[in-house]
Length: 204
Image (cartoon, rainbow, N blue to C red; front, top):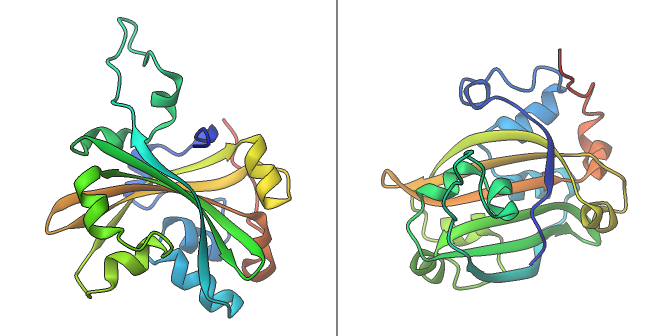
């Protein structure tokens, strides 16, 4: 299992939820990162190639550790998890994949699941999550909760380009219940179809 990427910048949660985040992004990148569409579908439309996954790992996730007196998590991995993961019922599984179109790696993703839910919904582990969840045409609701710039040496190696990289995380709900938390990191190679991301954010 790869360590979660390190965030260098994160948009405030309220800005993401109220569609105020990402003002510095181009329109195409803002739609990809903050829209509620499926990146699997977007990638296929952009490239003309079907999306396949390269499974990195799918394994039990350690329980979230209690906060210390200072409010910090005792475990560094806990700090990199989206806070919404704490709302999932345990025991948890974490799944990591590369998303490819042909020979191109266009995104990396990790997701957190209740173990029983994962066994029910991810029976074919070679399929992208979106295909697995919509195979029976059941309704899903996607809520985008986070926008960030992240870095990791293995991301630079996997994409063949230096970071930082744009990332988002979101939740899927079905029947009003939280189903999974997903983090996606996107390759700069997508600029071939989407154009430049525009200026990087900075602290005022």
